[in-house]
Length: 92
Image (cartoon, rainbow, N blue to C red; front, side, top):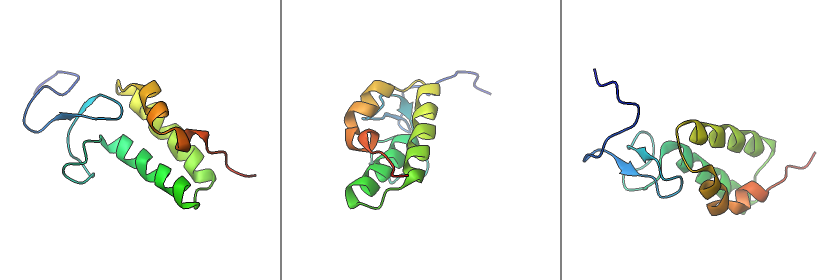
């Protein structure tokens, strides 16, 4: 079994264009150029743009951002690229 911590360059891996970490297609559509976590964050940003975001978006974005950071992604880049999502404040 391969004990390497990160994915190696290969035909099945790519660099996420949002967080910059090496990843592969899991549940996101082929050709999305996003890791699964960033793909979900872009979905949450779409909810903000569509006006249907709620407190769950705030909770979801925090959990996904923590996961990206834990996996070695560039958290600052993600928050910069998804600024509408991270500027969203849920109403009480």
